[in-house]
Amino acid sequence: MNANAQPRVQSRLLRAFVLQLALISFATVAGVMAASLVAERILVNQALSGEADYFWAQRKHNPAFPIPNTLNLQAYLHNGDNTLLPSELRSLPPGQQRVNFQGDELIAYVSTNKDETLTLLFQDETVSNLGFYFGVVPLTLVLLLMYALAYLTYQLSKRAVSPIAKLADTIEHFDFNARDAAELDLSKFSGPHNSETLVLADALQHFIERTNESLERERNFARYASHELRTPLAVIDGSVSSLALLDLQEKPARAVERIKRASRHMLDLTSTLLLLARDQKNGDHLTNLSVNSVIEDLISEINAVVPTDNILITHHRNHDLHILASEASLRIVIGNVLRNACLYTEAGAVDIYCDKYAITIADNGPGLSQADQRRVFDPFYRVEKRVSGSGLGLSLVKTTCDTYGWQVNINSELGTGSSFTISFGDSVTGPGNRVQ
Image 1 (cartoon, rainbow, N blue to C red):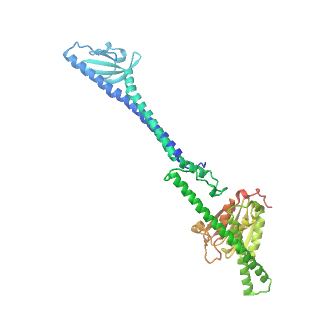
Image 2: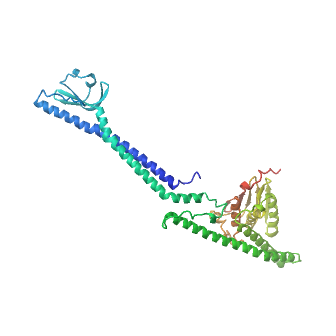
């Protein structure tokens, strides 16, 4: 799975379940601590305070009233001479506090009345038992019940989203690049008529069918159009070649040259459409190509059909770059970029740099704005309407590069020219040798 992928529904449910358990546990622990605090600070304090008040009230009427002495409660009374008290109790201030007495942790309550001081000792174990039976036990039972209810809720939620998760998993593991989308079988996702899974599966199936029909119509159109245009274009090209052999002058010669140029452009476009109609690389036509040789051939062709009297095309052979590709595809990519560079450069230079893994075609034409750079690969988009062309050249470049996994990038500024860099990636058959 992609490291940046968002967590799935079931993962989010599990996280919510764990978070819920953590919050319940925290609330339970807080409740136990609060119960223990209430038992010690409030209930015990009230009980001991009541015992002291009761003792002082009885002693007022009966000076011989005995001090409290029970299983859980001990008392010490002195009239100002604390030497009569055990050493652990001599320095205790009035009020409730914990004290270590004869090796036991006890709760002490000190109360004074005139010159007499009453010290009450309450067994800590009793407080612990109260906290356990009235705090820990009930809260533990509640905790277990809430755990059970939370787990039941998690299982029901997981069961509810499980079909959707399976649908997403099926789509994720289907290789749309290697297989046709029509092979994606969604019929196994059955259920009630109104279930979300069935609605999604039916919608996806319908979308795939509509998409396949649309793609098939486009492929058939490109295939049939390309096939039907080949014969008349070949006839036109042959006839123009025959006319070119005649000794034509001025306007007739220029007209023949324009027809010849348009015919070759249409032949290239037809071949391109036929290639792209296949929608995949044809392994039988992949060969080890010298990029520099293809560039030299294209420069010769462009010099013959495109007016380049005021343009200097320079080929910088920095590396002997070879790639595995279809020659027609490579000529489409380089030829269209180079042709565009020449068409948009009225006078100046077009430089072609062949590096280790990429080529760069740079011109000193008018350049492209940021808006034009974002749309330059859109079909039928032309930066300047005065420049002839269908607006399909760079769109074909982008489509062909995407087919082979190549990258095409633009670096351009208005008034300073443009440069197109084509990186061939894994198609490079070797690192290339530096040309001496």
